[in-house]
Amino acid sequence: MCAPEATNLSMHKQLPFCTLKKQSLNMEILSKIATNDKHGENSPYFDGWKAYERNPFHLTKNPQGVIQMGLAENQLCFDLIEEWIRNNPKASICTPEGVHQFRDIANFQDYHGLQDFRNGMANFMSKVRGGRVRFDPDRILMSGGATGANELIMFCLADPGDAFMVPTPYYPAFVRDLCWRTGVQLIPVHCDSSNNFKITLPALEEAYQKAKEEKINVKGLIITNPSNPLGTTLDKDTLKSLVSFTNQKNIHLVCDEIYAATVFNTPSYVSVSEVIQEMENCRKELIHVICSLSKDMGFPGFRVGIVYSFNDTVVNCGRKMSSFGLVSSQTQHMLASMLLDENFVTKFLEESSRRLAERHDKFVKGLEEVNITRFPSNAGLFCWMNLKGLLEEQSFESELKLWRVIIHEVKINVSPGSSFNCSEPGWFRVCFANMDDETVDVALKRIRAFVGKEGTKKPLGFKRWRPNLRLSFSSSKFDHETVLSPHSPIPTSPLVRAT
Ligand SMILES: Cc1ncc(COP(=O)(O)O)c(C=O)c1O
Image (cartoon, rainbow, N blue to C red; front, top):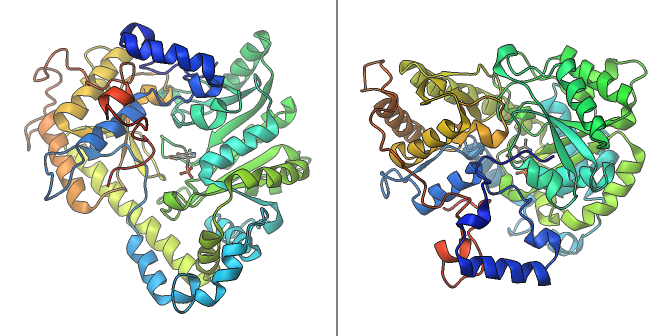
C-alpha cells in the first residue's frame, strides 16, 4: 500500500505509441525492478527539481530563472568548513602535507570502516544530542547517505510484502528508499493539522489494525525526528509512547534523525536513543537510528549515512551489507579528523543553528508580511507553508494547479503537500537554507508580487492566473528520452542538482 502519488495518473494513456512499445519490450527483457514504476520519482516533488534544472535561477546570469526551494540542503556554513580544510591540510591525502598516508587510505576497503571515522561519528552523534547519550562506535554501520541507510535497515528488518507504518506527511523519497528494491510496503498513519500533526496512539492503532485486517505483516514504524516536512521535533512523551506502542506490538521503531543538528530553536532536541535510556524494560533490540551528514553538516555529496542499531544481529548483518554502499576511505579519513576536532564541531554546531534561526526568521517574517502562515517549527531546513487560502477549492487537484502556477509564474520550486502524502490539501514545503540572502530576497519579492501588490496585504487568489496552465513535463507525461535528449539514454537525474 505505497502512498499513491499525486500525479501518478494513467501513464499509459498519455505516452506516445513508440514509448509504449519500447516499454513493453523492456518488460520482456529486463527485471521487474528495472521496469516497474515503484521508485516513486513520478511526483511533483521531483518534477519541481526538473523545472529548476531546465531554467536555474542565478542572481546575475539568469535572474528570471526558477528559484530552487524544493531542495533541503544546508548551505549556510560552508565558509566554516572551508576554513577548517585550509587550516588542516594533513586531513586530506591529496595535499603535500597528507600524501604520505595515500597508500594506506587508498587501499583501505574494510566494511567496518576506519576506526577513527567511527569514533568521530559516535562523538558527533553524541554532541548533537547534547552529550546526554553515548554511542558505541562498534554499532555504527556505514551506508551511502541516509538513502542507503534507510534501505539497508529495511533489508535487515522486513521481507518483500511486509510493511512499515509511516506518519503523514512524510519524505516523498521514502517510497524509493524504503520500498523500491526491498519490496516493502508503506502504511500511512494519517496525521493532520487539527491536532498539530501529532502522531497519536489511536491513529497508529487504526493503521495497524487495518493492515492486519488486510493480512499485511507489519514489521515496524518509521518516523523522522526532526520531521521532514514539518520541521518540528518530537517531545519525550510522544517518543516514549511510540517506543511503548512498537514494543507492545513486537515491531521495530526506526528513527530517521538526519535533521538532528538542524534544531535552531526551543524545545531542544530529544533523540529516541536518549529516551530509551530512561525506559525500564524497553526492548532495545527493536530500536534503530538513522543518521547522516547530509543535513547536519551540509555534505549530501559525501554520501555519509549511518545505521545505528541496538540489535546485535542487525549490526552483524548490516555490516556485511555495508559492502554495497561504503563511504569512500578518502572521505572517511578526512571526516575522521574533522569530527574528532572537538572545538571545531562545538563551534560549528552552535554557529550552524544560529544561522539557521536567522534564516528561518528572515524567511517567515517575509511570509508574514503578506499574511502567509506556516506551521510553527523549531528545526529543519524548510517551512511547512499554509496556502489553503489560495486554493480554488479544498482539493488536491487545486493544490497541484496552484503548484503549477507557483513554478511557472512565480518561478519558485516548492513542493506540494500531496507529494508528502499529506492528508489535507493546501500545504507546501519551502526550503530556505540552500541559497544566499540575496536569493531569499528575490524569492520573497516574487511571493509578495504573487500574493498581493507589494506593500498591500490583500491576497489576490486565483484571479490573475492563466487557466489550464500545465507543466509541459508533467510527470505522467514525462518521457526522459524524448523530452530531455533525443540521443541520450540517460535521463537527467532528479537527484543531481544542476550547477
Ligand atoms: C527524512 C530524510 N531521510 C533521508 C534523506 C536522504 O538523505 P541522504 O542525502 O543522506 O541520502 C532525506 C533527504 O532529504 C530526508 O529528508
